[in-house]
Image (cartoon, rainbow, N blue to C red; front, side):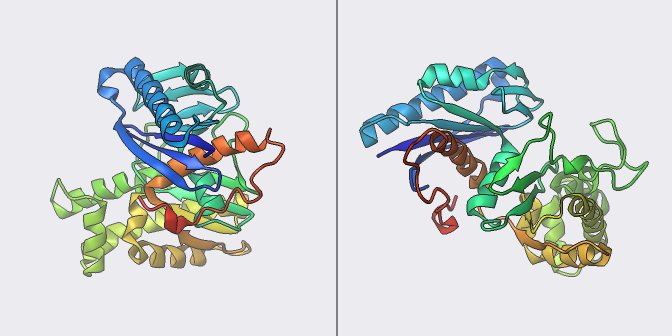
Length: 324
């Protein structure tokens, strides 16, 4: 059975899969990234993991994978295939595509983790069928993926979609990027956790605890939550004014609060729009499998660009088949 390798590299762990021509997940595996051993060890672990996946596929399906896709965090030069910088992995200018191509002997695509996850959400997840979408995961930070006609825009220098560094509170809280008042300092899961821990007096409290307190009617939690929602709405309205997406997909840890987040967020965005067309605001559908599935799509795109008889329906994966 023809298949590709899909690999999603995170700060602490890696998710991988072998993906068939129809988008089906044939095999899934996980492994620790091992960042505590240094950046060279991380690269070695990635190469070894990919080689093991290739060997498994050859043994199980009678032939090795025909391509591979890998998603990594940080700054990524997708055109050159270089992982330029990742603070949480400690690497700089790693020619990851070339290293994997040499190790595996097959074509390899390299992508940014959020853009790759956005590619999956746009094609086979919550944005399926939308010609223009914006995917915004709310995690430790906030990033974005700008979807246009089945692809994700990287920008001239690989920085497109960095909505977390739109200033929504001028002169506000300082951000590691060097600015003050960035969106992710107010509306990321880590920002809400920090604010709620201080407001509740519990240093171990996090964003999930805040959401639970909001659902129970705690006025202090409602105040903290609404401040985050208002900041998020300000950033999103700026983005939709510039990009005019048909669908706005919200994912990440904060989105796990469900309607506790989405009801006030939809209301807040609606209050702010004037001439803009209000997009559908929906939760992400693929969860933590999005990056891995997107890496598989990158690999399949490599094949489709050269295959004289490509898969007639490359986006046919049903999200119900890709539960974590």
